[in-house]
Each structure stands twice: as C-alpha cells, then as structure tokens.
Image (cartoon, rainbow, N blue to C red; front, side, top):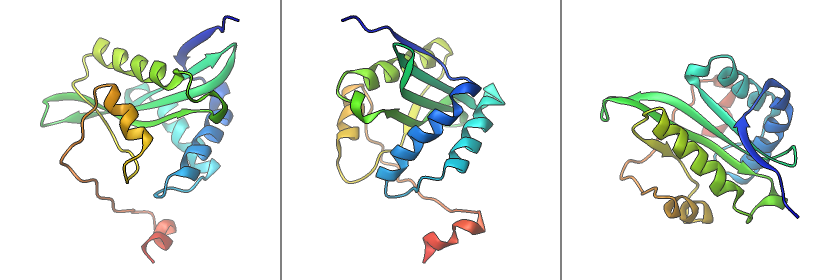
Length: 160
C-alpha cells in the first residue's frame, strides 16, 4: 500500500481543520487552553501576511494529518532573520509514522533555502518525548528561560 504524501502551504480552506488540530495540541499543554476562535484568528493573521510566517500541512492521500507553523522575526544576536517554530502537530492516529519528522525536515529545508539563521521553539516541561524528538533533529537546549506577560485583560484569570 503506497501512500501519497505531500507537504505544501496551508490554504484558507484548511483553516477549520487546522484550528481543530491546534485545539488538540493545546489541550495537552499546561500553559494553554483550546479556543477555536483564537486559533482561527491566529492562523488568519499568518495567512494574510506571508512576511509573518508560514503554515505547512502534510497530506496523506489528500487528508491533512499534520501541520507545522513557522513565524518569522529578526535576531539582533544573529544579525538576521530567524524563525520561531510555533506549532508542530500530527493527528493522534498518525503519530509514530515519521510524519512529524517529515514536517520538521521540510521546515529546516525551508529555513536553509530562505537563509534563516536559527529556528527556536518551546516545549513543555518536564522532560518529555517532544524534547527527545527535537534533539534527534539537531535542536539543543538553550540556557535562556522563557518568561511571559499576558497583556490582554481577558486572560487575567491565569494570574489568580
């Protein structure tokens, strides 16, 4: 059985499905809660301005089974453009088949082709399978510690 696997830029038509996938991801992360409207809004912000980033999907026989979301920014430390790998999701029933690796390699190849200097990402603590996955692809831990300040007053319940 040969599967037809394609990695390509996501389109507006994919928005609903991608927001559902992000909801699955955020349900597993302690810092975030699924909110379909927020996920749709975030994806649209990337789609409407390609200089902000890219969303790639992995389709298996036409169906979306994974996605990766890359945001573009500038690093004064690196003296050029860098990426933040914001989201990498593979549907539960398709995990363990190498699709996450294919998406990540696509992102790395894209970064090299476009002369980006670094890819940064955040993973959940404590030690988990995601960290091991990224290490296998050449990512190393940073001594930097992420800190956040939520500006939107609607999110103030997180502070209590």
